[in-house]
Structure formats: C-alpha cells, structure tokens
Image (tube, rainbow, N blue to C red; front, top):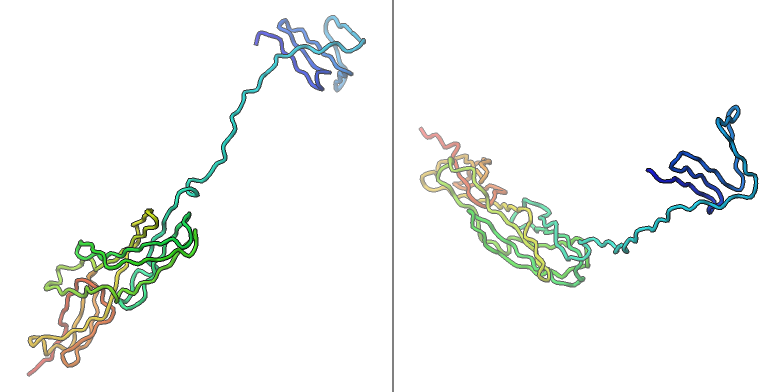
Length: 249
C-alpha cells in the first residue's frame, strides 16, 4: 500500500516501522542484529542507546461480530419415519410362515403399526388382510408374521397355449402405517403350492406330463392312474403338456 507498515510484538515493547518513504525504524527493549559474517550498513547510521522510544500507533481492527451458531440437529431425529419394508423370504409355500420386516424411529413403544397386505393378479391389486402390530421399541426393526394359507384363495390358472408364456405369477406386497406416517414400498413375495392333476378321458393314456409355471419353467412327472402331483408350482398361470403316452398296438 501507500501508507506506513507497522509490526509490533511484546505488548507494544518492540516493533518495526517502514514508512512510505522507505525509512525503517526498529525499537525494543533490546535490539540485536546478526549476520553470518558481518553486518554492514550503507549510508548514514544513527544510534539512540537511550530509553526505548514509544511504540508507534497501529491501525486498530475491530473484529466482526459472529452470530451464535445454533445446535445442528439431524432432520431424521425430528421426523418419525418408516423404512426398509421387506419380505424376509421372497418365495414361500402357501402354508409356510411369511415374515415381514420394517424399520422405524421416533415412535413410542406400544404404538400400533397397521400392516396391509395386497395381492396382485393379472394387473389387479386387492387387499387380502390387515394386521395390527404393537411396536416393541421406539426405534429399530420390527418383525411381523403372516401365514398366507389362512387368507388367500387364489390358485393355479390353466392356459390353453404354451405360447402365452411367460407371464407374471400372483404377487404380494405390504405397506405399513403408524400414527398417520406411511410407507408403501415393500419388495415382492411370490407363493407356490402343490398342483394336483387329474387327466381327462382324452388323455387317460398319458404316462408322463409337464407343468410350465408363469415364467415358462417346467417340471415333468409320471402319471399314476390318471393322476399327477407337481410340488411347489407358483400361483398364477400354468400350462400342462403331455410328454409321453401308452403306445397301444
């Protein structure tokens, strides 16, 4: 800049001033100038060994006042929430026990969670049951059991043409609501059960048949007295194909 430069330390007892004309003034209780060899001064040198002179005035700086910082609080600690809805197993037999899990926070233990379970078949969604579950804690993961065989009535739907596969099997999802807070995003559960097949008179000589599930995956089994049993076939569309018949002379 164009003004004077003043550096002070020791509560003003020592310092250096360089004015705008390039003059340097050094003061202090004891001033020592050292060099690796000798110290040379070019030009006129004045010594004032008397008492230390008064410190030069420096420009006073007033620090800017900083407003008080409010305590930072996580938004999630203030807002009750429900998350992580999932079926613990996504493929089960109809008569197995299904386990639903969800996480929650900032609800009182003992509050009621209402779980609604929906069935999706051929693009149509219907509610099959509703379960009330008291929260076991104010924050954490809850587990709720449901036995599908007690509530669902849908079964296998036979297709006339294998070319109609693949399709979507019957699916199940659930949602949770606690004190007005809701989450509807669960994963999908599919169910399977045994398919018992009685062949018609036209196919009474069949000795081996195949069953194709909704995805087009097949299982084949032998016939016994015109009957066949297929284990763990997904609920929803299926196609039956005769693979082998009795060859009569």
